[in-house]
Image (tube, rainbow over the protein chains, first blue to last red):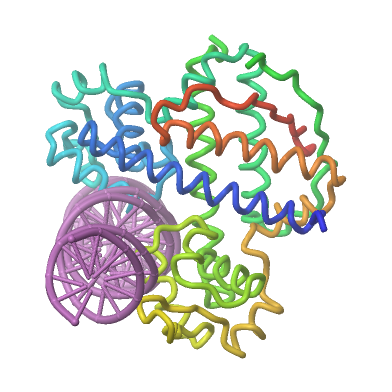
Length: 167
Length: 167
DNA sequence: CTCAAATCATTTGACTTGAAATCATTTGAG
DNA sequence: CTCAAATGATTTCAAGTCAAATGATTTGAG
């Protein structure tokens, strides 16, 4: 009665749902600890890395819809961590920038990643890190495949077992 | 200037965000096609598999907060796909059940999983399916680890590499 | 130049999400 | 038995999410 293909689908589904759940819980924990949620933190990190960006560019880089970003930036702005500045050359655009306080904050803010996952990741060899990243990226690719229209056949998917990191 | 640990962390983070994104997009597509979102579909499938459940039990099984479930069930109920029935023995509890229409609906509803991913998954060998499921479950384990307090040791991380489908 | 089309940000609307507070009911200690 | 504690569902609140509509501004065709 051990389930077979169909239950693998269920397991994958359950795992994805639990990933969503874990991300959300982590975000709420961050909010309680640092006054900032995970999406907010992701934006701050991106701004720290790239400097001032337009809303549009930032939205693309953090994989969020521009309309979603508005609320996130509103909250960051109300905390004085970022500021929006109209581009004088093209007044449709708004540059988003870290404030002094925002830069100071991000300099010692935690990773937006669950710390256990981040720690664990750092404990792996470079190669294993890459493989984990690649695995997740492949899952992303599979999930997105359907978004593209006629998306025909995908090439055979091959797994190779990875050395287990010594516990 | 390739990669290093730090950028792997970024890649993992980006992949997780994109997974959330893909799930959301898929859910909206489902809503447009079937009048039902992914979380709603997950609940229907669970009820089909398990029969009547209390709200609490259903929430646990689909990995959702009970308060979240209320809204989901409200919408399903308004579509006449489920009904809530007070337990006569303990009137605090409410059993949730598929209606006739709900059962008919779920019999031909799509998988809550992105269909490309589901198709792909079915195309794999049993063993590879298991490995993919296990990989994701490991990630879940790592992400949740921190939720538990002193969570010391983590189970060995065993992930598989998915080879990219030839573009 | 002029006005329609394009572009950028935002608003609006629907949904999901969890925590905390609330309400109804049951259970259990005294 | 009685009333406080526990339990199950729900409400309320704050956040995130996207699509579609809107508003402001710029660009480009004529």
